[in-house]
Each structure stands twice: as structure tokens, then as C-alpha cells.
Amino acid sequence: MRIDIISVLPELLESPLNHSIMKRAKDKGLLEIHIHHLRQWAVNEYGQVDDYQYGGGAGMVMMPEPLANAIEALSKDVGYDEIIYMTPDGEDFSQGMANQFSMKERLLIICGHYKGIDQRIRDHFVTREVSIGNYVLSGGELAAAVVVDAIGRLLPGVLNNETSALFDSFQDNLLAPPVYTRPADFRGWKVPDILLSGDLKKIEEWRYEQAVQRTTERKPDLLKD
Ligand code: ADE
Image (cartoon, rainbow, N blue to C red):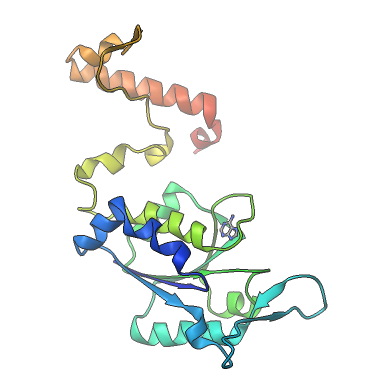
């Protein structure tokens, strides 16, 4: 899979996407990430990519021309399945959306800054608008890193134990059950006996009951579907 990202602050993306599981995905050749600085498509020698908004009001808007030039240049070389704009007024990101995106071959992600991008780019180029929550970040980069991480770990072969993503929270609309590791008795706080029993069928049942209970208590909305 290939993901291209357009940003005015590529430094913000580099660290999260170059460590741990994302690094492994790249090293194994399963995920290619290309980060592009929007300024290379700036309209003048000052590297301008934003301007005042029509109608007045505080805050700059990202100009259509650099973005359109960037999207067209990259699309010509790559050809994208989705052009995603990270924005707080987008569709809420979810595990389901991560699953969908992980089945695509090529994604382009646009990170906004300031007051956002000119509406005409949203109208004419963007195919999905994605929010990672009801709060405003200073730019789309951290949100893009969240989305890329959630997608990247789902690609077959990225996780050591391939089945483990299948049992993550939110797969099957359930939160994950509690987990424990050694020691079995820590300060008198004991691991549930069932997990030490070796009875795999009973353990599976217990985990399922715990997952349902946790979901009912913490995120009952997930159970509606
Ligand atoms: N850019 C700024 N805030 C954001 C959010 N909550 N989700 C996605 N992109 C954003």
C-alpha cells in the first residue's frame, strides 16, 4: 500500500510514522509513505501557500492553487483510490473506516492548517473528509498520523501475530477484554483464576463476556449495530 501526505509541517509526521509498527511495515515493504511539502507548489518565491479569507475574519486559509497543483502532480504519477482531507468537521474516524482504507492501494491525505483549506479544493478534489474527534488540533498532521497508524497495522503481515489485529478493541464492535501478564499475584492483586486454568474454551467464553460487559458499561453505542 502507498500513502502520500501533503503537509506544510512534514516534521510533525516524521517521528510518529518512523517508529515501532509503522517502521516495521515500511521495512517489510508493506507500506510506502511519501510526505510532500506543500511549499514546493507555492505560488511565489516567498513560498506562500495561505492567504486572507474573503469576507473578512481572523485566520488564514490555505490557497487553492498550491493544493490543486500538488494533487494534480501527484495524481498523475500515482492515481489515488481516495483523496482524504483531515478536518474536525469531517466524518468521525472509526475502526470500520480504518478497515476500509486498509483495503485500498493508494491514498492521498491532505493536512490542513490555519482556518483550513479553500472550499473549492474540498468540492472538486477531496473524496473523504475525516475527523479524529470533536476538538481542534493546530493542524491535520497529528490526525493524519493517527489514521495512517490505524491503517498500517491492519495490513497483512505487519503485525507479528497476524490474528492479533482481529481481536483488537472495536473489531466486531466490541472493546477488548482485560489482559494480564506475570506475576499471577502482584501485591496480593490476583489474575482471574480462569486465565490460569488452561481451559481454552472457558477462557474464550470469559473473554467474550468481559468484552460485552466492558462495551455495555463504557461504549454502549457500539452495541447498537
Ligand atoms: N485538524 C484539526 N483538528 C482535527 C481533527 N479533530 N480531526 C482531523 N483533522 C483535524
